[in-house]
View 1 (cartoon, rainbow, N blue to C red):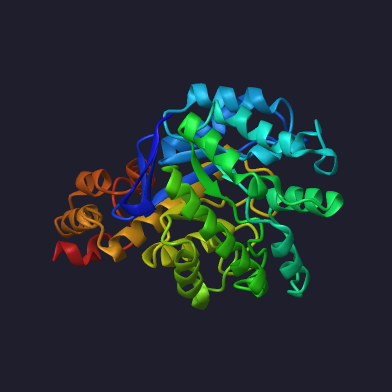
View 2 (cartoon, rainbow, N blue to C red):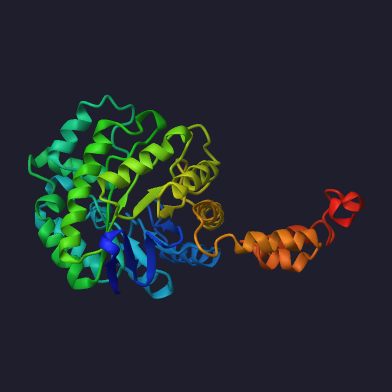
Length: 375
């Protein structure tokens, strides 16, 4: 597990995966148990399916069963970088946030650090940030699980968020284990009506300060971004968040551009992800068709990765990333000459395209003999 920061912290290397300035847009897939579904084998199967579908990284969000076992099984199975969320240990039932101590927070981080390449640390959920949230008039409040756990600790104890108060110790652990820190968006909006409010930007400012401290220590740091943003505000939110974060790589969930697409939230997220990517987002976290509805299955994971890969590729083409458009141009040439195998070879998902073509009788049945390319 080796990480580094480059070009003033505007890019990071997560176990060899480049994220940020000058790199292509990367895709992350989440897996993980819940308290009601705790099959380690199933989560490994999902992670391998995500990797096969083209995910650049996988993150373990487990909160049920033996969390250490899940993480270590994923580590042993995957070739791509693995991330996790240490504060989710509080969701396993071992320790409740109200009963936790700063040592519990740092101990969870130290435990995860042995098995993963990057971690989400919700260090921006401070007492002052929560005060701002309470004045914001949000519809949904906190929807981040890690943000919620941290809020429970801060409000029940009256103490500061340990990840913020003891950020020097967080950096010590990250430096020792070669971790990249993904500074978590504990106050990300859970609906488009809550997007871009004062609480979210207050947290982004705090994370920007922590990015600077990370750079001073030579620890790689990314900043996580908003979850729900109406389409016409995606550019504004992405650019402002990156500005507040000092240009650190931006890692986004979605963003989802509508709240009304349950069952197709992966499409909503792909739309938002493409626009976010072309405006500076560096790392897109997929959303599956099961979002807001239940724990995703293997098929959901695959569909989520594919949709997110389309978004990432579209963003790279729009940004002019070297080589990004090469496949598009080759597909166009192959279509013009009716070279089916070349079309499949240069497509993002060759096997899917080939199978769909074969189901039409090894021919495109749309235009049939009236195909303009046959001219």
